[in-house]
Image (tube, rainbow, N blue to C red; front, side, top):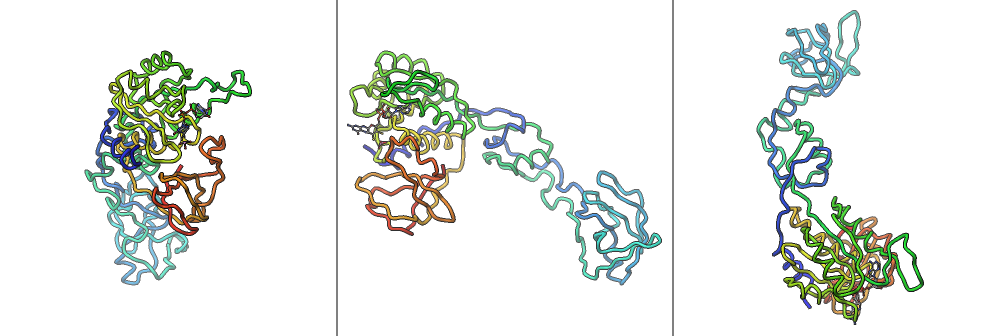
Amino acid sequence: MISFKHARDLILTKVTTFGTEEVALENALGRILDENVFAPRDFPPFNRSAMDGIALRFADLQSGIKEFNGVETVFAGNLASKAIVSGECYKIMTGAPVPEYADTVIRFEDTSEKNGLIKVLADDFSLYQHIAQQGQDLKKAELAIKKGSAINIATIGLLASMGKSSVKIQKLPLVNIITTGNEVVDLNEQISTTHIYNSNKYVLKALLMQNLIEPKNCEHVKDELGTLKKAIQSNLNADILILSGGVSAGEADFIPTVLADLGAHKLFYKVAIKPGKPVWCGKLGSTMVFALPGNPFSCLVTFKLFVEFYIKACLGFQLENPECLPLNFNRTKKSSLDEFFPVNLKNGTLNKIDINGSGDVRLGFAANALAVQNADQREILKNNPVCYVSL
Ligand SMILES: Nc1nc2c(c(=O)[nH]1)N[C@H]1C(S)=C(S)[C@@H](COP(=O)(O)OP(=O)(O)OC[C@H]3O[C@@H](n4cnc5c(N)ncnc54)[C@H](O)[C@@H]3O)O[C@H]1N2
Ligand code: MOO
């Protein structure tokens, strides 16, 4: 059995890229950019009025001029055709280019207009006030977004502002899922007292969808050596194969044997964590295989700790160190394993979530984070910091 950290380090030795693709901007949210994007023009591209008002010469205000002749109105999208001289101003609308002859904007609210003369009521003004100056956000040819950046909402807006209708991004992995177990039936199937519904299938699919991945194939297989072998072989046409169940010590837990028979290169089998100890990980041909324990909460936890970790590392997401916050209750443990438990992060503390072990179908559903009690910490007292990952 290896430590959690050792298991993660082994996974990192298998990090690869799934290739790149060009997608329409509207499909790029949450993905990793695979190109440097340079500003195609200055932003703003011209001195832009930030207010509806009048544009005038600051020097006039400084010399005490308070009344101005409005010579032209400049709307957003238009250019002024006249040059102003001392004592003259433009009426200008938000988003319009401030003509080169003006350098200060006064809001309409701070003016009054009578007989064509516009009076400045405010006494407090500064050069370039209410003007977003050309190139103040980005200069033409400046690196606007670095290759490897995660595309968030703001990035989508910026890319659109730069006129990018499509972007080069990291491809997502192809993922297949095989759930196992004679007692496990799909929703809508006949269920008897000793049968259970296949919740892992839906949890794994949802976890992948959370990572924007739609599984390529998803099937359920009985605990039978030959059938399992065939199913695994026919699901190696993916970057990642996720198995659930059949990895522990039971007489029908065939997965580690089948994987060995198929010539898989094992990275690890059994990690010093709870839940999820019997997790198996390795490579079969070019496919990365994660065989997760069947217990629902173990399946969820090992996906987050290992499968998602691998996917994120391959895609080039920055792997952040876990954050830590005070635990709002006392927690003791008997095992000498790293124990992961569901918590609810609220108001800066980690609050208790009821869960009866890794077979609890509730999966800690009110939880929004997974906290860890390290192997050597037998007891955590209330208000002591605990590290967690978001769910
Ligand atoms: N003698 C030992 N027994 C067990 C050990 C051990 O170290 N020694 N480890 C325990 C731990 S920890 C776990 S976790 C489980 C893992 O078992 P398996 O991966 O072999 O999974 P199964 O036995 O197939 O199932 C366990 C449990 O989960 C239910 N299950 C399975 N698949 C699904 C599914 N798709 N959807 C919902 N629920 C599922 C299954 O019915 C069982 O109740 O082993 C312990 N045993
Ligand atoms: O790892 Mo098992 O997941 O403790 O039940």
